[in-house]
Amino acid sequence: MRNTDDQDGFATDATPEVSDDLDLLLAGSAPGVSRPTAERSEALAHLVMATRSHALRGPGRPRRVPRAAAFAGAGALVLAGAGAAAAVVHAHWQVPWADDAVGQLSFTAPSGARCEAIIGGFTGPHDTVAAAEEYIQSIDLASVVDLDAAYAQVRLTSIDGSELPPTDENNDIRYRIAVNEAVYGAIATEMGRQGLSVDGFQIQGDEHCAGDEQ
Amino acid sequence: MTDDPAPPLADPVADALETNADDLLAFAERRVGRDDAPDALAEVMLVAWRRGRDLPADPAQARMWLFGIARGIVANARRGQVRRSRLVGRLRALTTGPPAQGAPADRGVEVRDAIERLDPDLAEIVQLVHWEGFTLAEAATVLALPPSTVRSRYARARALLHEALQPTRTAPSP
Image (cartoon, rainbow over the protein chains, first blue to last red):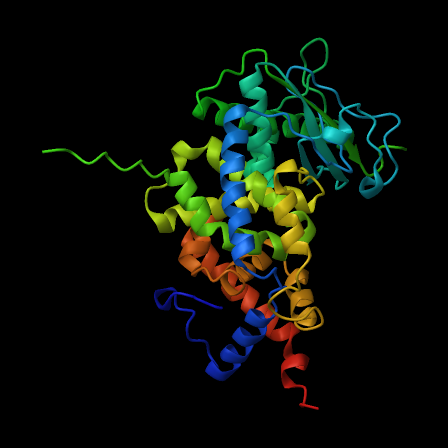
């Protein structure tokens, strides 16, 4: 099944027979898939038209999101803290929309703590909410948002406006804020590209980092 | 002289989806399993319809555009976030019932494990090339990465797999 480009320079390796052997192994490792039949083709054609009707009619979509949790939302920044679950991978999300979370993101805070975040609870103009949900569910969030760039932009200040010292805790808070900003920024950019307004549009989030419970 | 009525204009989104539906379904089945794949495919189609104005006119580019959407949907589905769709009941019955085509479940497991142990960025390229049949240039388009990045990652992946699978490949035949 391998189909590399000759011009890419991978059709030949240092040891051709070894390469061929590896190619065969890799091609043969593809998991089995369902059998294409006339009946299945008919069902696929039906699905094409059914999704067309559904897309034009608008959402009303049941979801299945077994686990979740994300982080803070633009305009309604809520950082998880007390009560957060002990282990990131077993986090129990407390936010009421957790079961309907739209997206999930893993990241490493500056202190080295592994964190997981979910976003959801989108509110605002109907078209924007629907489009934003579709957008988040159609992308690999981690590959779209530039967390380090957002982190560099975030400043953490005290009530008198002075910048707080760069302790591990403060840096982690900055990073969590940056996550929020980056995700919201990515959504806002896409909504702008689609010509949709983000006036009144908000997202929410919850996050858990290893050590939050301490 | 009478003019024949103009044929209805083909819908490019429908054409692209129908042309690539089998491959998109296989892509989803290989990554999220046959139970969830119809739901993931329905999501891909919904997004494609809603973003139809972005569909490339060129069929090959349209195919990669669809796989780019599918990649994002599958990433969420793997996190358990695929939506159950009422639209796929018939398709699910057809995909989960009959025996799968391709390698039996016990073949290729070791190789799949080796691929899974790769960095996800590397594994994805291997899967696109060897499971889905994309060229490296096409994989770069699907992944929205520079071709040079994909080429170097692919080379790295092959080197790692070559090393990881050495015992398998040198084992004597029974």
